[in-house]
Image 1 (tube, rainbow, N blue to C red):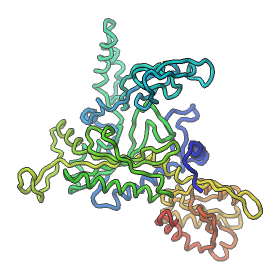
Image 2: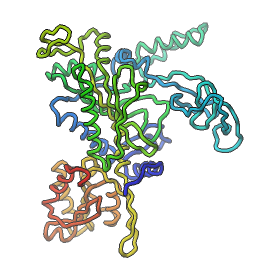
Image 3: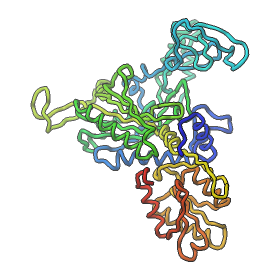
Image 4: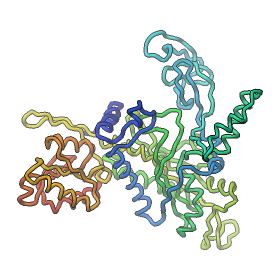
Length: 510
């Protein structure tokens, strides 16, 4: 039976991911780097499979969407124009008791003047202190202390420099002893700005600035979309929940350009498409919901937004945002560069003049999904624990990842019963057939057959093919189903078709 969302489930997922080669802490032998993770042999396959299925549904199965792979570093004026340099920041606060640094807008709130009790230094025991909630109306999320620093804005973009010369040398040269601290800071910022470039905080802007090139080179007609999968970087104040919120992450974004006035219909369409996509690969659609944004949640450029949310162990959390961005981005980049980022439809009448031929700046619907969050979502959805005993009273408990076959790292595992008598050779022969058909499969001859079954249940392999002496006699193998643990004898020539049929089946019928 499927586990109910709980923090205990989260700890099990983290443990499984390290034990079975899905996700490792980055630089672990050096003590690790907070908020950075490496995807192991199975994790990179799962992530790649999710990305491939998204790309298939967005690009390969449609005629109106094409792909793009824009650079991570872009001209700094892109971020100035988009508003990221001035507005892409969070309110940062320090706790004067435990020294924790946190976002003010995410802190626990209490009425001004509320009496709070907390432990000195943020410890769980020891000297107790008292204080009252200040006018800010919030307390430290770690120790509940109301004694906090003032808020200051913290820009979320990672800044670096482009060029062969270390800008530090130039910074030191402009600082004079007679300068005030504020003057020194301004002088340093001026030098840094000359060579500054930024790691992109989103993939969207690359698609906006290449709108005209893509539209003209591919002769695309509105409505059409540009899709992209790639890494983004945000210098988050608070990183949390494993890979859910980290400084380096991957996105699957698509900008869909449409006529002004049609954005409402396209918003409904893409909300339906994206919800259906997640449910197609999940065991249960009950873990997903579509939440509309309230007016005070909308970005200044948006006239509507929905979040696809998943019930994570800590509660509902964003998995994908579907936003109506109006024509804000194209308009701003056109104003900043003087390039007409517009579309001319010779078959449409201009609403203002009534004459045939309408030039307009397209509106945009943006489904922006988190690839790394999707990895976590599908791992949580797939994790099952089954408990029981057989007719002899032996424990039959097992952990199984019921990943959709298209997402599973391995599609099948070939298991020779013993390492001799020609069984390994027959197993390798089957492996070659499956790999030549484009399937990622595993050859596994380590430990007992029962332990091998358990291992592949835990990593989500849909089928295990056991090669025994009968396989040499009549060309058959025992095929074991991951989800039901049932076994049947089939011809080796039928195995490929069985696996392919299951990959294309609805999860509910797998």
